[in-house]
Amino acid sequence: MVTTLSEMTKLWDKTLKRIKESVVDTKTFDSFFANSYIYEREGDTLVIVAAHKVAKVMLGGKYADVITDTISEFEDDIYKIRVITEDEIASSRKKTPDQPVEKVSKVTPTTTTSQYFEGAEVKQNLTFDNFVVGEFNKEAHKAALYVAKNGGTLFNPLFIYSHSGLGKTHLLHAIGNEIKANRMPNANILYITANSFVEEYIKFVRAEKDSQSLKDYFKGVDVLLLDDVQLLAEKVKTEEMFFYIYQDMINKGKRIIITSDRQPNELKGLEDRLITRFTQGLTVKINEPDTETCVEILKSKILASGLSLEKFDENVIYFLAEKFSRDVRELEGALNSLLFICLNLMDEEKITMDVAIKAVSSIQGGKTIAAQLSEQKIINTVADYYNLTPSQLTGKVRTGQISLARHIAMYLIRKHLDIPLKKIGEMFGGKDHTTVMSGISKVDKELKTDKQLQDAIRELESKLK
Ligand code: ADP
Ligand code: MG
Image (cartoon, rainbow, N blue to C red; front, side):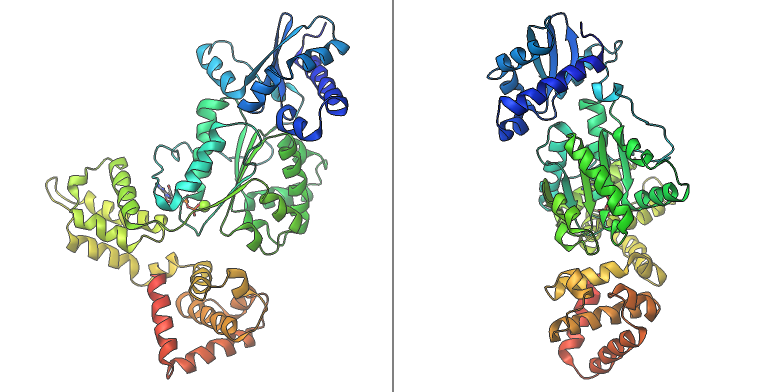
């Protein structure tokens, strides 16, 4: 008699295999049978977890007889099945906290030693509750909430992209927190940046660890939250390893959520097969927030910091929201410097426009503007302005308009960030420093006489602020 989880899992595997081979077509199998697993046995009944709600209805209804018939080929004391979804496990778990139940995937032997990604964690303070939703991010929010609340393979992977500072990392942690709080309390949820994947891979190669071990580590991961995937670019060996791990997780129906600073087909230096796979789930963009939403964000952050909105002149909030509406991180930075000022205020004193303007101009003056600017931001802004993609701007095509835009980007990077010419050359597809120099001096020279160019630079600089 089959009683242990691993015996039951074997039985289920055999059953699925038989059904796939001789009972249903591949499409039906993939839609309803794939990614189901055994939860437990209750007497003569096998409890099966279906990948999603529709699968539950189909397996427990139309295909129930097929399933019990097939099971009976291998095992003669199981007559019935009961089909549930992961959500139902989560709620039954809540009701009986004294009897923790483990998913089968947890019981199968995996090396989940924490030799990899030490310190990686889902940050508890980044949740859906403190994520403000507006027109600019509502699609990403909806998709994130969906994958957090539902198992199954729909929208796997979820790929979220935007410029920096617009809430991608926040959403990843929110998804992790939501899954842990409700759907899969015992799940092993891994939040990492692509950079830390690269680092672990290098450590793994250096230490010449058993070549399976990084792969094995991921076998114990139920949900992967991968931040800033663009950082995998040009790392061929690491990509190979990642590809394997990615494919294995997707095949097993494990949720993967990826973020990036650009859309998949602009991920220069990443293997095509990865890019293709990234687009097989759902891709959503976070746009730039409108002022109204920024006001909401500011208000929620003020309240979260324990201050009352009364402390601020209403105009101050609008002023900040308008000034920093391109980037929530900058918005927070500006607010933090105001909150700092608040520490020195008397109880009844308010933050007035005067105070706010001073605080903000101190952030914008001198070095700090350079610290807030990055070469990527300049590249994105210039590309946007000339209707190009960032990769066209840093690429090799040399038609008039693209060349001009490229020289302007180099000029702005040099002027505002004071980065060495050689490094600028590297950002633009490995150009020689003399090429960069000549591009920059061209802009410099033409700026003296070309009115249109002067306007363009002025407008770009104001966008960068
Ligand atoms: P990204 O990963 O896109 O660069 P982050 O997720 O790090 O951006 O967001 C930058 C900061 O702004 C974080 O402190 C984050 O909590 C905050 N933030 C971004 N979007 C929102 C939002 N919609 N509501 C509340 N806070 C937000
Ligand atoms: Mg981020």
